[in-house]
Length: 157
Image (cartoon, rainbow, N blue to C red; front, side, top):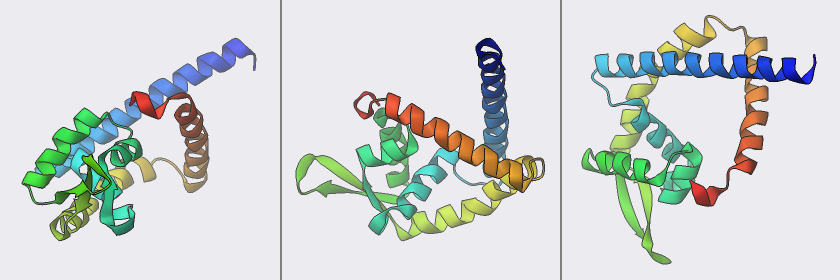
């Protein structure tokens, strides 16, 4: 495959990936709302905090894990605090910094959301892509994410 063919194939694959992502995310959002659950962005924050040591991360660490702009994360965090799903703790070493800390309610909410989200992933991804293909997709996209992460300076997020 020549360079031009490879570039065209990469563009097509990227387009399909983005389209599939939007459809799956849209269906997940619909399913969560239909079940009376919070939006998917809340799930992502709760999951990241649940995976963190002590269920806590500094705002900038959480933003980096989620690959979102801090101002967007601040709005989501404000809503999660208001709902009692996370708390903010001041950082003793940096008066301007704050930790987001998962509460017991936040842990329970993430656990309530997962079956609905998982069902969408199973219906729209696992049912159409075999395990061997999933492993190739995961490994391939991990390489892309690592390369893109190296080229995208953290300071600009």
